[in-house]
Length: 218
Image 1 (cartoon, rainbow, N blue to C red):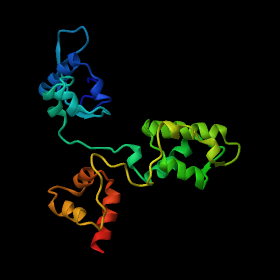
Image 2: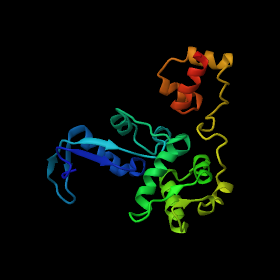
Image 3: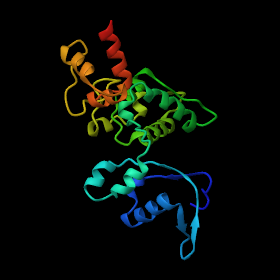
Image 4: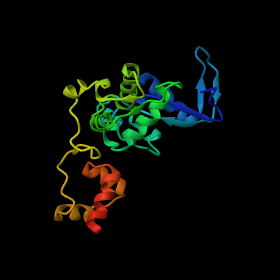
């Protein structure tokens, strides 16, 4: 906190902070004061707080695992980052960027069409870190400059089934109506909120929703 004074304090893995520390964090946010470890002296610091978590904080609040007052104090401008399995074609863009980092400066690896199709379809329970590990392993196994299917851990597909569609995430809590059906048009017409909220409500990526809306308009 002292080092971040006048700047930004980034709190990673917010959902893993124990309740005893959450109380102190709330005091810092409310009063701008803190104590050094072992010191009785109160110090002041003005910081911009940015936090991140992979845990469902709303559920944790209802279960008493995360303080409600701290949650509302931090949840001022939330930014939702969808998991990799919902990113569609972005997977390949990320893969190309990560390949630049893991393949080394002496050899630039590229993906074969079969490898690219596998990467698009994989479910990624480990998210972006898993994608990086998969590519790092592939670069180690690949003797040439092109990564093929045999260089990928295809055995993972048995534990985490491939997506049936390269772009669409699996339905959230209900089946998604066909874009030409009356139910889809009614869902779009009756929904009160942003397109981003509508996409989340229907269990779609924003890109897929925009494409289907254009199909309906046509």
